[in-house]
Length: 455
Image 1 (cartoon, one colour):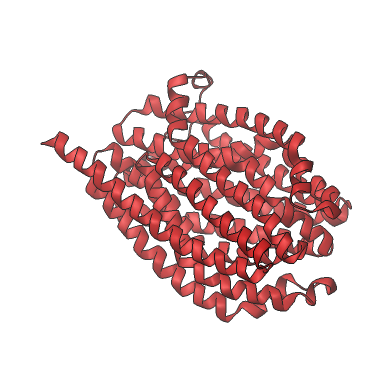
Image 2 (tube, rainbow, N blue to C red; image 1 turned 135 degrees about the horizontal axis):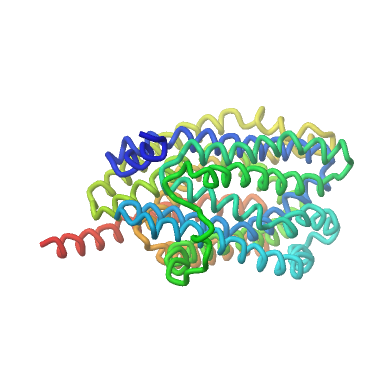
């Protein structure tokens, strides 16, 4: 039996086993990606507080560009896995090819929009003093966006057929290459923050080529042939039914991240953006087990939905929720206890050392939201597996509005960065509980429909 056949057999089998078979590979891949984020931050920190603030301030713009890749990747995972669960391999092939075509189209559109609106957005955030540094950082993303988006989408296609190890290789390749190229471009060639952005884009392009080579050699269950690369409105619509709302959800999330920079700067100056972002560097690491389980759960639950086995779907969801909560609670405590030495790693430059106490305080308070942030991810992922991405999207609209409202009050009424951090914890507690309730509610509705059809 080939690796591709074995992966598909596992995906369609016992859900706990299927999730366990993929979760370690996803965890390793994302751990390397997060390590890459820290290495990137480490090298940029060596350029000083101005460059560090520029990267932290412009990161949401990069995030906005990547929203379509994230959304289409999730749409590809859910729909292809669903079709494989139904045994419809031809449709799975068309879905994969059309996902990549959609990625290229969205990359071109997003690049044009960012090229036009990047400077005004940075000025709106109140970062006039570092606008040139911000633009230098995002310039490579504008011109090389198809590499970045399609790399993200290819990972979703690989996950859809249970090819966790190959998806891991693609992600790790991009991260490791970036860690190697970063210092060469930033310091060796003297490109500064422009080199940091260029390194990210080039690394993603090389990793994309590695992944596509497997399809060119016909080593995967899903086939990407020349004939499949024809625009199919029905297939594109199927991907977008799941990926579209996920893209909008990601856009809302990244837009609120961008807007909240305004409130952070009003409350605590441009340094407040660093305090906020650097804490989330560590929170992202703590959330890795949860994200790994989410990535494994979506194709398993989507395939079970395709098989119309709702009990298997529920089993995968509950198994994921249990382990994610255990891991997030344990590691949140560890992060709180070791916050001082961990923040010291990222504040070694002289202009950063004097800011270290505020970095440490921000990280310690932020650890309170970690379990609830994990619940938000699980609930949203389950809704995607149920093809109910719109429910999650509408909720994120509401949640983002509430979050920004609370941040605005903290900034303009109390003029307090500390109040913003307290608000951040509160809205994540609220968000985690609500999304888990919505996922449970939608599952019960679909379960009732399937039961009635069976009877």
